[in-house]
Amino acid sequence: MAHLTAHDLLALVLDEGSFESWDEPIDHSRLDAGYRQELAAAAKRAGTDESVLTGRGLMHGRPVAVVVNEFRFLAGSIGQAAAARIVAAVRRATAEGLPVLATTASGGTRMQEGTPAFVRMVDITRAIMDHRAAGLPYLIYLRHPTTGGVFASWGSLAHITIAEPGALIGFLGPKVYELLEGRPFPPGVQTAENLADRGIIDAVVLPDELPLMVDRALGLLVDPPSARTRTRRTSEVRRERTAWQSIQITRGPRRAGVREVLRYGSDATVRLQGTERGERDSAMIVALARIDGQPCVVIGQDRTTQTRLTPMGPAALREARRGMRLANELRLPLVSLIDTPGAELSPKAEEGAIAGEIARCVSSMSTMRVPTVSVLLGQGCGGGALALLPADVVIATENAWLSPLPPEGASAIVHGDLDHAEQMAHDQHVTAHDLHAAGTVHHIVPEPAGDTVEGLATAVAAEIGAQLEALVAR
Image (tube, rainbow, N blue to C red; front, side, top):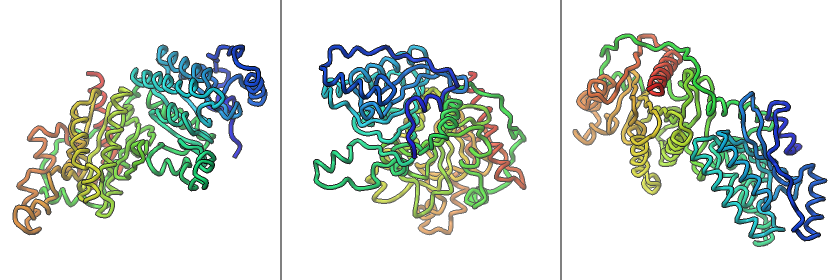
């Protein structure tokens, strides 16, 4: 696959003719003659005056700041001048309230300049974190190769991190490892695909797909809410099923889950993967979405991936907390969707701090700085369900339920058998109606006879959209 140059990427992503360079000429007069010759040769080869180009442009009419690495200029290495450019561009973007789109292709710090260049990674990091603290988006596209100090600073600090297929991405250059250790670096570790599988980056995207991905992300992060188009279910909800009947309905295979709410209820969705710290649990979905016209961050328990063999573990809750942090930082509403038969109960989960992660989720949900809506979508079992419950507004589907244990577990504790599960479901007041009467749930979405998966998912999205609109307006 041919690798794009910095100019190719600018032409690919930005509206035609919209790029305005922010780069000032660089004075090399104080450098020794040999290094000046090396820089001149690099500039001739790369068609750029440094390893980084910065500026402002339009992406489908939206103003954005850009930082683009050019690998053909001394392997994209970052010297003092390149670092100063990045810092200046990010600081200017922050001052002008612009999102930053960055792309890397670099071997890391420029060895010809050594430690003075190396420590400038701190300045870059500080500028990016100030940008994020201002509530402004930072998106990055990691290209082949991205290694060393670049990956260990501005390459790993984005809200959304995507990478080029097959790209070598890692902290340690494999050639350096081989020379130091006398053996090759294990294959397949430092690939974009492996990092995505392990929850370190969010996605692997072909260059041709990059404009669509960036447009979708900016549409969620920058564009205002749009008109709601889905119809709420406002009919009176009557208690027509027993608690046990509702529980059986939510456990059925044909039940709307978080995937269906996003499929039928979101106008645009960008999935985020993992904790960014080498953990990924398919039990949790984290996404940027526009639910019935309202931009938000979604964290949701995926009913289709939680089984006895693959229960929701601590990493899933850490992924949820990543979504909470993003919502606070990007100043987007947070929507949590609860649908779990329970968190993982195992020695591994204990060593992974499952109890602490439940506590930290409850704490984070209880202290969010943005509007929050939680949805009791189906099963709401134990601490794993409670972890996503606290919100400004709590919605429940008519058959949803919440309990400290599955009814079978409660029966085992109280009666010493499983035969009283149905009675325990009744006695523990687990239903959406009970929760509404107690004030835990604020709105119930009706589930009429003959309801469909698409119908329920759409109705849930309509209720979420209406509640978000009211909360944001308030």
